[in-house]
Amino acid sequence: YDCAKPLGARVSPKAGGVGLYAALRIPAGAEPGVYEGVYEISLGGERFAVPVSLQIYAARIPEEEHLKIINGYSSGHAAKCHGAEGDAAACRALDEQYLRMLRRMRQNMLYVGGVVRTGPDEAGHYHFDFTPLKESVEFYLSLGYKYFNMASVGGRKSWKESTILVAGFPAMSYEAYRYLADYLPALQRFLDEQGWTERFYMGVSDEPNDANATEFRALCGLVRKLAPRIRLLDALSYTAVHGALDVWVPLNAEYDKHTAEFESFRVGNDEIWHYVCCGPRGGKYINRFMDYPLLSTEYLFWGNYKYNLGGYLHWASNCYQPGQDPFLQNCPTHRNCDSVCTLPPGDSHILYPGDDGPWMSMRLEAQRRSAEEFELLRMLSLRDKARADALCAEGFRSFQDVEYDPLRFEEIRRGLLAACSEN
Image (cartoon, rainbow, N blue to C red; front, side, top):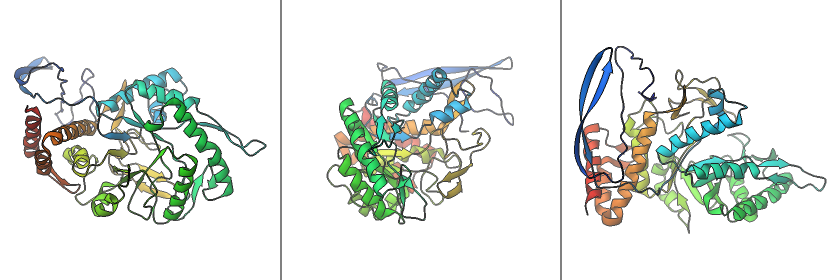
């Protein structure tokens, strides 16, 4: 099971069985202890009683997140799936539902864009209206989001070529320079005026590789000259772009293979995060795929604790591909520039377009638990780092070495809760 259809709707068993999932929100003032109760289920005129034992620990998950989490959200895909295209009020209501569901798993960062460009004028200058961006960010802030990843400055022309395109121009061209010389200072002024500069990151060109690494580094240098206070962030594998970014987001398998090199990038205030996408696939590396054990998803943020990685990135929470019905197809065709692949199951989404709004997935719940467990490990480490490290190592030893026995994992998790509950 992955999609979690809300109770209250009609349950449709398959092969004579149905899975039920219940999650209880513990009130902040609840007394620690063991509570006994019963779930009563009515079905076909019969009633069933399922005894439940609930243990509440004294440990409390901090409201403030200490990990930056971003899963790409597409307002357009949500609107299309729910037949709300062209209806601004309906789209806003849908966005709120979807984004609140992502907040459930402690996601606190979003991709943003929406800058309106005009020009060049007779003098060759471009002009920018940041009103749509301002309105979007204010809406996201009202929902509890704190950080934003600005749309990338450029993008590759081909996976096999060095050229990066900026506003349709080769990044190293005079035309691209003229465009950036207007855009980037204007963007920085806007962020400074709003008091948002510390909340923002910006991509330069997603996933630089050996073919475009030199041009990528040169473009990063130009961006720094024109907007020196905006932090640069990109997802990448290990390639020759050292010194180019402020936030390095390697694929978790790449970090595992090149730990020493990536750790050497911690210069000044530089950060290291990690990401997963359609890879790593195969071998023992953890990812959030539907055909992997659910614990593979739950361990993602344990890696953040173990390696002091400040954030996590995935490109898709609801990025359904053309023609894809996520209830029927989970391995759609995906096009990225001149690359075409079949996505592994679930890579395109952790949210489903339900009848009455978004339906969550069990993988989203696993990420929520993972984010909470990160906070518990961090909280314990502030008091007893050796103990936190030891508990972490019982479950997570590396991105390709984790404990998959669910009973053993539950013992480790209870041990973590108990340790965090001690005075």
